[in-house]
Image 1 (tube, rainbow, N blue to C red):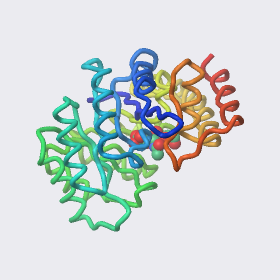
Image 2 (cartoon, rainbow, N blue to C red; image 1 turned 135 degrees about the horizontal axis):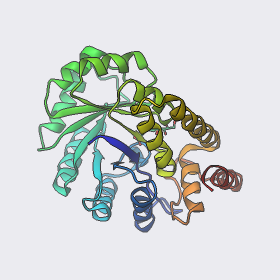
Image 3 (cartoon, helix red, strand yellow; image 1 turned 90 degrees about the vertical axis):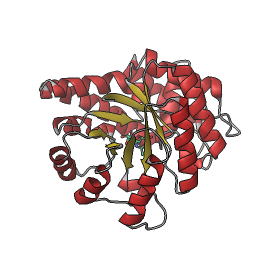
Image 4 (spheres, rainbow, N blue to C red; image 1 turned 120 degrees about the horizontal axis):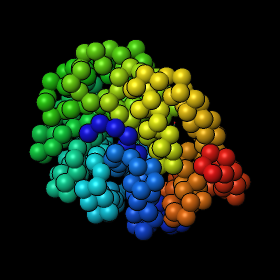
Length: 289
Ligand code: HMN
């Protein structure tokens, strides 16, 4: 389960319906061009928290059908509706997903006992493995080292997707849980996270920049830090441009430049303007040609 995983984008049509053909093209691009080790399906990048249960299931189905067993698949099933999370966990497990992931429950200020109950309810309902999805800047949920340790006591909880800039906590985790999988979540900090010993990375920008992401990861693992840093610099020029222009809209527009029907974002996310698309075209020409 180690390596480079794209947090999969989903193509929507103008009315916000899933564009299955476009979704399959994005999957293929990740396998054939980005050469990723796996896909993280149903994450933030998949605009998951704006979708219905049936739509989430359909995406899991289409992706598995396209991937077969070519690369690894992680299904993000977390939801503030625990019953839905369990239903999705069962569904993705039956489809053959290699592991599940669940975002920490958000919106209400759940205490740690409630968070632990949430994870155990999901993972104990299926014969599968769980990767905690920790993304404090979006959820407001900050767990400490001892709390992670308590969750990790369950052998089915095999790792964490660590989308945070707290590298002190990351280092403490690496030392304390050598056998657990840690995935870096911020693509722009990948080099530093790799130096601290993460097992892989899960990122939105890998949908277009997967090759550079692998280079950074592998060079850093080989101790070639200066070379890795050069590639991280280019990557971060790209990420800065993407973030300034609109994250998912821009990654989709860069894919469109490559003939992929990456489509629209789901409302309330805004539609990209002609100016945003022109900027994305310029990014494609600058970073990928
Ligand atoms: C997911 O759940 O879709 C991703 O794994 C989330 C991932 O950590 C991305 N975070 C968000 O999109 C909020 C990053 O790849 C991020 O987009 C990138 O580092 C640019 O900031």
